[in-house]
Image (tube, rainbow, N blue to C red; front, side):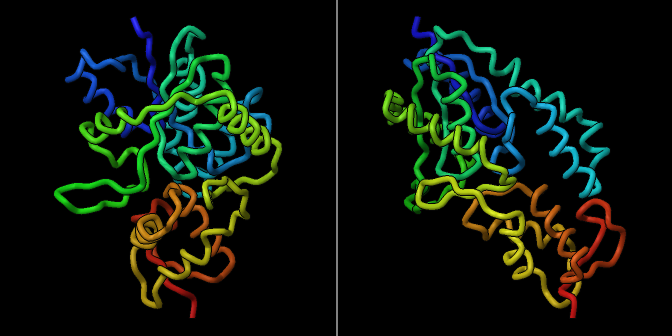
Length: 266
């Protein structure tokens, strides 16, 4: 028995991997699939390995400031995050771990965390290419979650062992991140770097017109056009900060993104 265990970063990737292996039970890398769901590109990482509650409180604060605290409580996201770190990551040292990731800050930060956590295991990686062919067209992929089950099945043929040298480098980079006070990170030239919280403000202002439109449309345009992978929660949070700063004005109820409109302050 090969005893492989796959870690998918994000629910979409986990779902696609489950579908692939459900239909390919004789595959040489067949194994259990676990999910890691936290977006480590945002929020403080300081002390995360010993005090997860501090990180969960920071995320809850974002939900509170974006009018979604009821959503956080209703879907018990605090317990889901804890499960992502505890039960989902309860893995024997005998397991051969396969980590799936793409070249974006969310998956690259998670990769470093996971390699550090399971440094005593034999770890492999499947790195999803940034471009993939579909119907003879070259498609740009921002994340692994955009791959179909069949595309993931093809990607696993490029699996590679994370050797000691690469493992040490990833762990070193993780240790650097957890000792920084930054609460936002991006990726440039394959390196994760800390940035200030207002990093995306220019893009938010760029896609906010002079006439009122739904806030959700502005957030969607920033997510779609940014060369980084960033969650709508953080962009929604920064949009509201720009309202507080008087750079953007709104109409409607400042609750969920669909409840209010925004425009540049004239």
